[in-house]
Amino acid sequence: MVRDDDPLAHATSVRIDQLSERSWICLPPDTDVAWVAYWTGLGARPADVDQVMRTIQECLHAVLWNGQSALAPVDQLLPAGLIVVPAEDRKPNDLVLAWRETEASPLIRSFVEVACQVFARALHG
Image 1 (cartoon, rainbow, N blue to C red):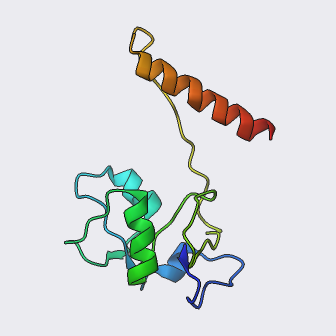
Image 2 (cartoon, helix red, strand yellow):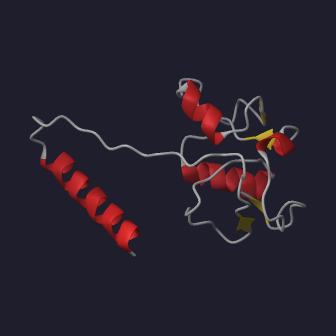
């Protein structure tokens, strides 16, 4: 995602290696390495390691206010001023939902039910 005044804002797509010189958001140091590699440019330099982003909202605002770079889910709702430019060399990321079958928590059961309903609606329109 980029700001709407970014030179890439009207590109039909971009490759991650085209973004290597940009300043990227910085995820927490204890974030899974594979997660960081997927959601930031490989080898990208974080903008400011003192400004760690912990939520998608923080990432969105870092792009909007500071001009940093970040990848976002395709269907992410964006605030005014941001545009998604598809990354042609980034494969879709599969999301897996797993839980212990013996878990009796009503919160987990409710979450699983809602996630399955949302997935079914997305799948069938």
